[in-house]
Length: 373
Image 1 (cartoon, rainbow, N blue to C red):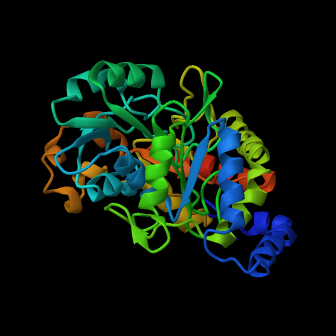
Image 2: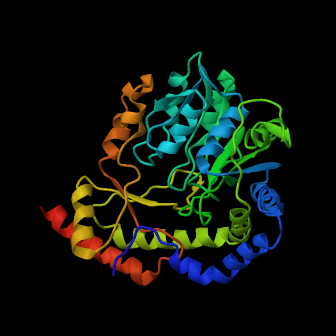
Image 3: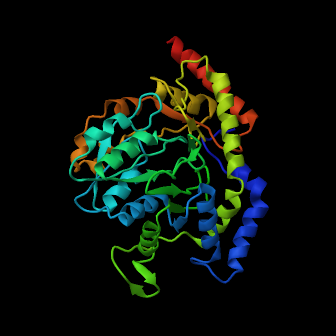
């Protein structure tokens, strides 16, 4: 039996009736684009976070891009972020015409090393974009301090941190705006692409709604450019409404899976995830480290039919598509070293103890041979 790093099949089987009812309710409504499901989801997602505004968009990449544009980021600007992230974070930055400036990451949490922020600021810096990675938050107090000192905006990338908290405060509620992805693998995942931005600023929300709808505030009349066709689908919004009510349950299940891993693998040669002080981790992925990463993944696949994943094997600044950027020449020793060691174990709410035990037993078997070599 193949064991995958992620699967939605068991979750769908348990929630099938509600998911199909959500689809039917939209198809029966007579409104398929920017209808009541999108509007209600926006209200409910904003309320979950305790903010005033939410604008649904078509994916997480555009959630980041439109948030930056709504704050005036564009050509000639720089955005400080990390290279240890999914490429879409940086694709969104370059899509505005701005360029990224990378800082390295903390070697323990793999999050943005905020101690490097002040030195990364220059006269072109417009925004800081912390990535709340793997399910926990970047320390936001130093981010806010640097942003205030230099008059910078903050856009939080929360694609991997739905429901994560820092000091009791939800991810996405500290900066000027925050971007979320609802890609199916996410903690709050749709059955296709989807995204949203949240903000406490009415002016930013107004800009976001114009940007996602061709630059229009009223139908057929373009007020200002840029404009995009970037609308959250009505069907996905209704599914997300139903799943939002179960989000805290999904998080509790993920934490239970993480706790089983920690208890079962704490005595091995793996470096297990560390939660930063003050954080409540939601374990979007369960990322471990080992210097023999590639051998471990290969043996698990070939000998035990366990398929793992690497998030992420190539730091963004090393990718050919970004080679033209000045920041591609940045030295990021921690990011580059960890990219060769990190990998993700199966993590999703419906992962049964029996399946997880199979992963643990297979992994311990492989580690025993690797560590003894």
